[in-house]
Image 1 (tube, one colour):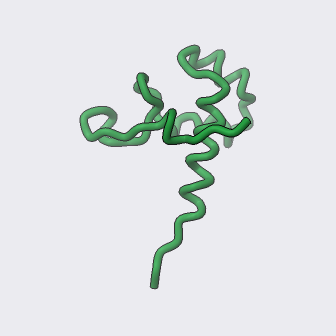
Image 2 (image 1 turned 90 degrees about the vertical axis):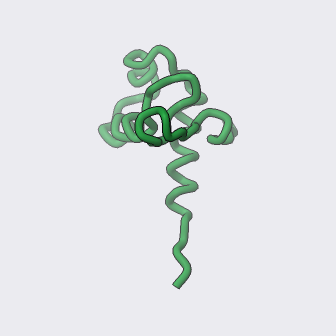
Length: 74
């Protein structure tokens, strides 16, 4: 499943102090990444956060992938 994280994740200074979150929610991306790191399945995460769908989890991973590709110029 190909998902563009920009369709699902937003960051605004007025909500959660600007932390990236899923559009239409107050669920921060880092929280879901923590669940994934703790080896929760997509199904378990969605059961815990019913506002999320499979596409949100994929978007979360795509967001993390893009951040990991960031390079600082010397």
